[in-house]
Length: 405
Image (cartoon, rainbow, N blue to C red; front, side, top):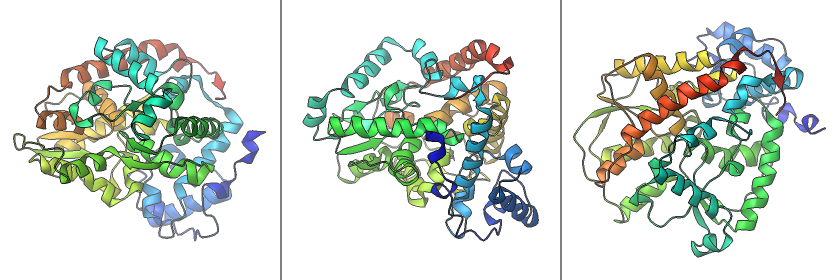
């Protein structure tokens, strides 16, 4: 069976680990002392219950950032969740968050699209099947993953130029499955993507989303053996290079102090990656003040907090906690550069109202080139998703049924 082909060694370098506990001790979420952290990592390695980790872990990658021997302890946690999945499956309520399922959050978002967004996403899907269109662009494409399809209007901008955008449910990078340790659909999807992109002749893929960028640049090739022949680049880097070449100019906006919500994947992509949004904000005259937990110490927006128990209350509670830290930073506004973070923070704001504005980095870039932004649309979309996921998912929330993906 496919499940039997996954080995702990594929995700965690057990031979180099000294069980020092540094990775868990420095985690901003777990709150362990050095002795507790050492005990927890020893339990995880031995395959014994690690109650503190399994009860508190936000699936945020922090432990990988702090491991002194680069052993990838996050992969150890994921592997233990994979074993949980083999034993028990996952609750049926989790399917709404899984982008490859027959009905999920992206379908609910699509129900709320504007006519312009429907037109855009239809074009993304046609591009994803059009080998001639890809060849005409010399194989260079912008990938719009699941979170771009929550807010397609964020890519309705001239700063993208003539770069063809591809997207669609069948192109999902399977990140949500990976983050909860549900590995079999990740491998199946990897194989489908290898074939699809080889046929399309993709030469270079630019990513709107840090999660998709990390999945196709690192996770799928390193952990699952993917063979992608194309180059990868993050959209922020691509935009900054356009500025340096004089192809794009961002006008200064009204000066503000902003603080940044870091996506989890950014931490393992490194300081240079996390500096790009800050450099783009500086180009627009914005000053950055950091939250108490920022960059390598940043905490999840709440989306991945569902991994430990598939509990939406964990997700909402963390989103509200992020707002508390953002307000304490003294910033005038909160900026996200991940659309899933944007969604979670807007939902958190519904339950913990604040006058502090929230923007996606692309909204500010659109302002800086004189374009109308989808700010009101984004707020309405977040409310729509929150209410409709709750309404359509409520029977599943109460169901004891568990399933395999």
